[in-house]
Image (cartoon, rainbow, N blue to C red; front, side):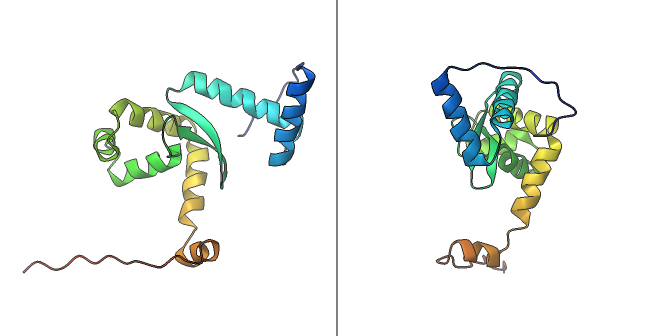
Length: 147
């Protein structure tokens, strides 16, 4: 998450919570200050956008749709394949349309974040995937020609 400049704000935590923050920061390679700023930013984004939550993933910390295994960028990518038709995406996912719209609203507000995640996904080809998952087998679907 990028910031356009910063302003220091002091925070006090009970000792146990401060230790939890230090552990979290260390696990992500952040300073405690960076971790607390990140968590505050995520809380503010949750306030501003319906159905949005944040989780750790193999690609780092990302925005996800609540009660879903899909990251916002995945819903945005799916929407592109449906011509940005939120109703069609909602029908495909068997979700209420409002949940898809929430993902698209977040994606629009944080376009660079979402585009970066999509680009990272697009950069993974079968060869890279098979290094991570040696048991993977490539499957290429073919559509039979109609007579």
